[in-house]
Amino acid sequence: MLGYTGILSFGHAMFYGIGAYLTGILLKYAGWPLGSALLAVIAAAVALAIVISVVSLRVRGVYFAMATLAFSGMFFILVQATDLRDITGAEDGLHGIPTPAWLNPTEDRLFFYYLALAFCLVMYLIARRVVESPPGRVMVAIRENEPRAQMIGFNTFAYKIIAVTLASVMAALAGVMHALWNLNATPEVFSVDTTINALLMTIIGGVGTLIGPMLGAGVLQLLGYWLNEIFGPRWPLIIGIVYVLLVLFLPYGIVGTWQMRRNDIQAGWRRLLQPLRTEPEQPVARKS
Amino acid sequence: MERKGISRNWLGLIVLALFVAFPFVLALLTGQPVNVGTPKFWQGMVIQI
Image (cartoon, rainbow over all chains, first blue to last red; front, side, top):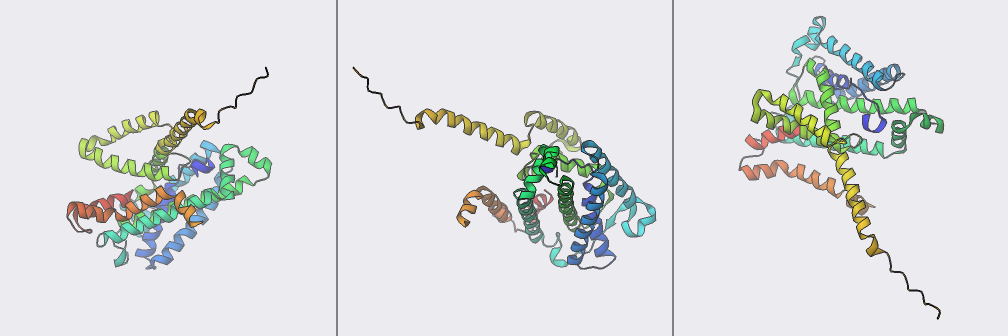
């Protein structure tokens, strides 16, 4: 959404939270099977993404980001409302989400590990298929120059809705994985911190790449763990300094900077080897 | 066609193979079963990522 269509959203945690909460409510209170809950989450994410897109995509840039932040804040307040304590658990959140025995991450961690790996792979392949498809090219055109894409004849509004919907469904499915992994869903999943973390992962990994955010997630998670081990409760201060250094020295993210440097190195080698590859000129016979 | 796909994605396939083998490699290195102790902890870490 951000890297390929250029739409910055500050409310993506809302879809993540809806995925987690809806899974928890349907499994715990409605007694739905997991497959049906999964379909319900997808349907809810699609419906909500379309509604929010239609309303918010009328504005662009930071105004869209603010509008999505407002929607996310609305859900953040809603799940903490004491009126809904019986459904959402209010400030305490939903705990003890029942999962099938074969899916319990505590009992069979290895199975869940492979499930998460398969989920990640499927999401990556879907995203790659989309960005390499003709609609994906249009999304890049919107990012680069929206008026020009409109002048060519593309309905950019529809393409932006598709991008937001797709990203929202992915975030909601990640929320399902969150609920299945933690066996709970707390109001923090709707907080701005969740969105900021996702944005940091994308920026550190590399905006406009598919591998970048995954790499960024790995870097942040491992950095957080190791810095916590070394510095104890002061680790957020250190990680803040690391963020600043990463943004200063890797302005295009890890993958983006690596791709740029790789191209520079390849261009340098080409320039260096060019004289060897060109055939020597034939000497012209002089007329005496 | 398949060969072209493999040659294009060889790095990704290697990374995928490493992640598939990761729990068992860790179990081999630590001498602990796959679903206990250090291998279990690091599986959790990768899941969170």
